[in-house]
Image (cartoon, rainbow, N blue to C red; front, side, top):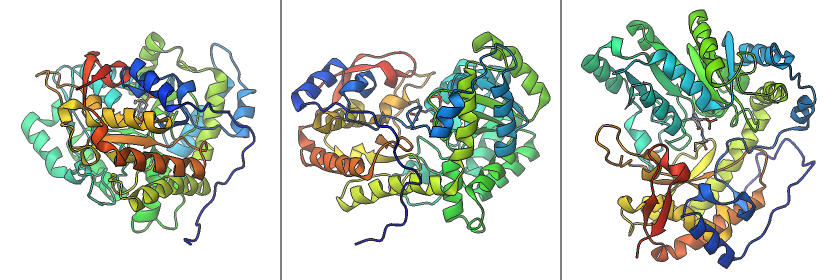
Length: 459
Ligand code: PM9
């Protein structure tokens, strides 16, 4: 038997009961949801692997923090605790709270992007790219090619390809690039990290061209753990130290605190530049709330400050990533095609390989996520052509190389037995893969269509 290397550094104090459903009930539920797992009712879901966003289990200390909420309209004590925590753990001098990550993306994009600008990034993220486009910008993918190959085992698939970045500057000029947007643990690439070596080179590149470096730090702690495990010279550094070093190389950050920091709601925009802070303060009152709460209750800011401190603990992170690696290993043992290396927040199923009979134009990943729900009540998320959306100029579907279903693991929520059931369910769906049908849209929203679009089966 394989020796266990980790176990959860916590014990369970409270549980939430789950409803078991029949296959007939699930077939009806997914048809009513238009074959979109976002439109299922959560009470009809058994194991919810839709997302790791806002669904983690808070600790007793975070819940205790909720009782310390100072719900003053202005100058809440919890805001100052949060600001101080972000300075100490993430290096950024100024913090503007927002209701969640996209609130921060909206403000940043409106301040920095002008019509006709280009924003390079290490792969797109849905909400991030949309806000860049709404502000008049065009996103340019500068991630290394390996990131688009589910089988590549490159240890840092989140790295930037400097040829792509240099080509962009040569084509459009540095003055058309307001900032480079760099995500840690790149979500759409399969939860893949960027190395500190690559990030340092990017810092130098940005200095040389006088371009700002903005950090989507939604999963920075997971990225730091991979650096500790994989990058030369970091084995004896703590996750906390590496997180600080990553942030310190960048000028500003957008954060969805609903992931790494284990709160149910919240986010922020953080920066070192006083002028940018002043502009962000002016805009946050328009869209979110006063700059000392920006859409968050005092109690939520307190839970967030505590969550940030818990998120960078080495034992927490090794259990977190260990659980995902366990799921990945078990799926591989069963011959399931998945993105390699295993991600930091999820295991991604390769839907093109599992359902080769469904052309990408018939949304194989969307169909696979629906089939998995019908099989066992497990809810996953499509991360392929539906999520990619349409090119804003041509109106054509983007056809990403990665056509994936994401089994996303909430932090501190599910057990190893839940992971085993997940593996069994995926294997069952694979056995009957030929029966899974392609889909077509019955309703296609113009923006972020994966959230609310509905489909019907073809044939
Ligand atoms: N990510 C996720 O499930 C939640 C909604 S989109 C399906 O992965 C990054 C890297 C994210 C992210 C959200 C956001 C937006 C920004 N950057 O959801 O607005 O993964 O808090 O953050 C989701 P908010």
